[in-house]
Image (cartoon, rainbow, N blue to C red; front, side, top):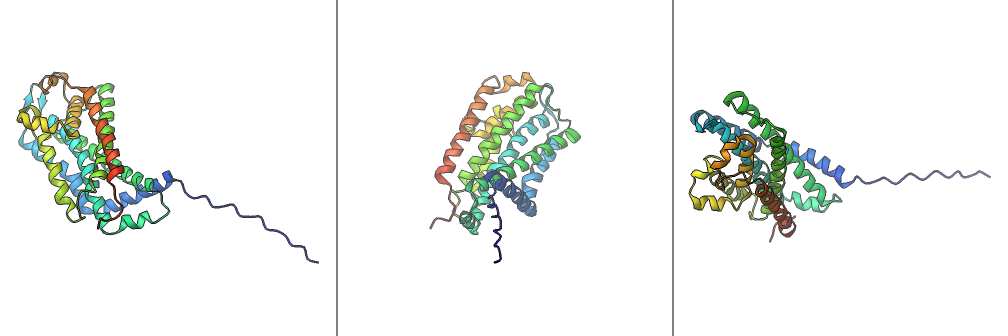
Length: 276
């Protein structure tokens, strides 16, 4: 009688975790972004072109020891975060919703959180490259000075993180506003451009009309610009700010509040499929 030898049971295959799937998704998002030449040029090259134009044309001091380029770089770093996070996602996600990519993803075993982790990794990488480009070109060609103290670098990191977080969440939330992917650029881009003009990116903020300053103060870009001015401009420039000080505590609170509001709006408004 032949003995039957039982084979050992194979261990069950463990499904990848949400974080691992999110990391893979982030790599895919970056690869897809790099293939969209128009998006890469607009997100990364356009701010650099603006720096080159404004830095060349307005080659003067706006205050003792403060060049316009030094002021402009502070604002353009903040504006670059808005472009890379809010504008990019608010345009990209409606297109994915339109072509059915989101619907297909929602029908797979991939946790929804992995999709958003991928988006966060993508905009975080783009924002990092954009910031490095602005600082590198500003230093190399326009005499921009970097912060000289650890405290200013720490505030730079805090404002950068809060700005990226708030703009990313708001971009995801706002992605439900455009009715179609084709209309998204026409809906989103004018808003971003308008905020740049009224938030102290292209002009000294206090030279704008008071009513324009008050409107800008509702939105996070104004506070991101003000925080970056603290980082890159001398202490004496605080007297030029509307409150006569940098208002660092208020900057952090406003940006944190916008991040929380963006998270709430994401949960309330995000849609995986087109509305009928």
